[in-house]
Length: 239
Ligand code: SF4
Ligand code: SF4
Ligand code: FES
Image (cartoon, rainbow, N blue to C red; front, side, top):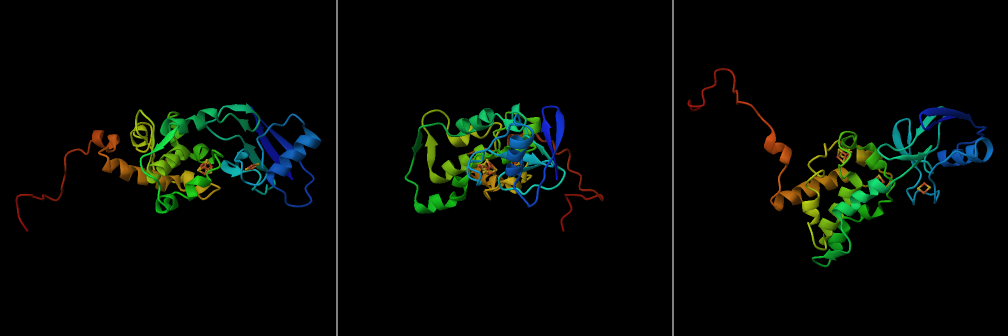
């Protein structure tokens, strides 16, 4: 079985003596122990809990500890993160997006009811693997976009009645480089290993923003041109 790993600018192919299907993470450990001790990658729990092993496999985000690798797979580091070495990336900048939407200490403007909490139960399972962030096409053109997992967290606090202490509210904080910049493509939802749905959370935040008096700033500057009803339609003639 061959595995190609992007190391800096150079792809390097390793041959493994696999006798049974193993996870990608096990294969990376095998390469490190038998073929190249300098190979660097993120890993922790080995059981899909810590979120530290996410990588790109043939261009798609996967947790290395959950994915069974295939012959000739190409493994690369996550997108939009500074690469520290090989597959290991620096997640600091990406995780700082959470601070922008949820300042601490968090002050709850009301005590969340069990019903409030049930709306966001799934979101609490986020393991900060950054797969959604890596899959989001908006970050390719706007590195300041808050990104899916921060917006999912924002929805959690809005739905539960939380509000940052002092300064702008969470709803205010997501207006710029936030919910209106999302294209609703759903890539974040597709790749999430925890079944979280950031796209829907962003749509919910748009609804809450509308109720708070905000609107899509892109919509305000769109030019729809002069209406053309075609076919000689005369709006003065009644039906
Ligand atoms: S739905 Fe929005 S946040 Fe999710 S990947 Fe697409 S553009 Fe990014
Ligand atoms: S929302 Fe899902 S894909 Fe995004 S960081 Fe959390 S667990 Fe990972
Ligand atoms: S090693 Fe923890 S999620 Fe993969």
